[in-house]
Length: 108
Image 1 (cartoon, rainbow, N blue to C red):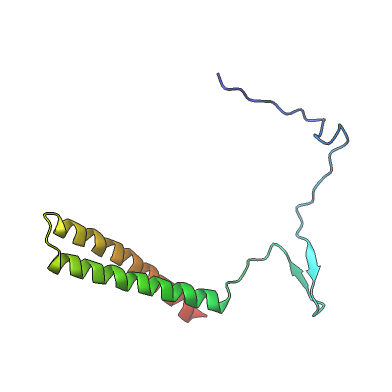
Image 2: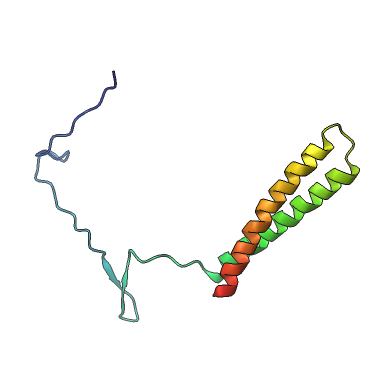
């Protein structure tokens, strides 16, 4: 039988005082440009971070394709084709990730 504690509606855990009502409105922060900015606005990715992710996914995809090629041609094991197929599948996933990131980067 699970042990679940039921909450009492009238009490708060801060010594029995009344519970504060929290508003669901976003808090406005005033910037030096004197334009209020909402804290609930979506964070934008810096261009350097998007380029870093783009380059990293490209390098990983190229490395996976190279590993699949090497494994298929030069690796002498009974499961070499299986390893090459798994590496090619992983390379395909990273290539799709790269092209999705590239399309997002070009849209900017």
